Image 1 (cartoon, rainbow, N blue to C red):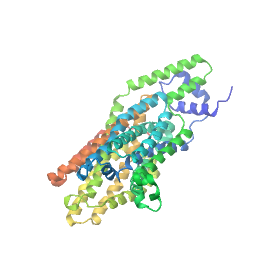
Image 2: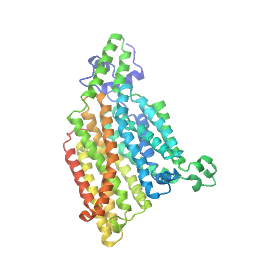
Image 3: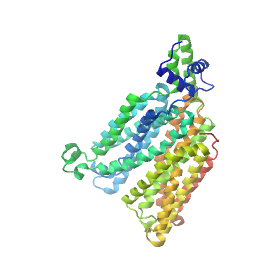
Image 4: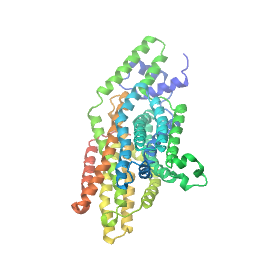
Length: 489
């Protein structure tokens, strides 16, 4: 009997790890006959490529924030009226998330049909082009078009999450998924740094970069070019190193390697039917519950993300802390380093020890605590008229609590695996989760900031009405998360 090639052996192992009752019997038997290893080696290089692609989302979406207001004014759309800047900048910032949200599911459906590799190549390459295009735009309409393009191409983030799950063995998933919040945190740190440091480089470094004409004509091109360069690196690494992980595609490849065309035909038809049935039966009770939990989790994270800079930058007499942008940025950056280290060291171990449900419920409880600490900060600040040690103590507790809060990004993914009726439906579930999450992230900031303005303008509950409403919504999220089943990591 001929020894299978390394490619066939790898395909066999991946397919076998996804074998279920719906897996064709002939294929399952063939996989068992040809299996050479009980578990795949840890796919470090493959995971590095996927995480780099994921890193492109927070960087390309957030790099514009330090300079978007100036960029909008430079297009002339405001006609010199600075009061209109926020309106037009808001359009630019929001269009990204709506474009991403409405294309996340189509990305997944396409990847279910043609495989994961092609979408994972198209997205970073296209993202590099539209991000660079954004930086050299001269009109507001072109900003909107290129920003929408960024959102559309970032819609494949759900595909990348599916690839992470498919790459890892069940025993490896806790460690792999624990890296997701670390990558996201790194992106949210790097994005404003790139946007703030490298905007208007001709003015900042007139004796060097100032001699380059394109940077004089387009002062916001350099930070966009750096972000585009990262996406381009991700594309080249994926082009030369990323392997296919779709169970459907791998089954078809395995079928073609069988000796008789008759057997191959049976396998291909069976796997095709399984793929079609998965979408029709996808909205079962576990999936609907998972979507509800994911919705509330994104509400909670976005409420906190929207309120923090608003509360911290508002003057003390108006119910805030009076921090400047440098203080806010420094506090978050200093916190991000130990957060990443602790997540790396303990998150996967915690999920294994206590289970994904405990980690998810704890994350939701943390969201309630985070919201409730805002009025305590402002109370101490108003009492003395300055930010004293008590305020900083509460801020420290709040930032420490957010470490637990962000663990939910990884733990929720285990329920996506558990809720999937079959391996082929994993991509569709990830697409639905991504769609729900991005739409919520687009709506929640306006909800939080509007409630904040309403509470203070009308002095409802002494300006604390916003915290009461948002804390109740987060508490409802705790109740919903407690309905999740107990599963092992």
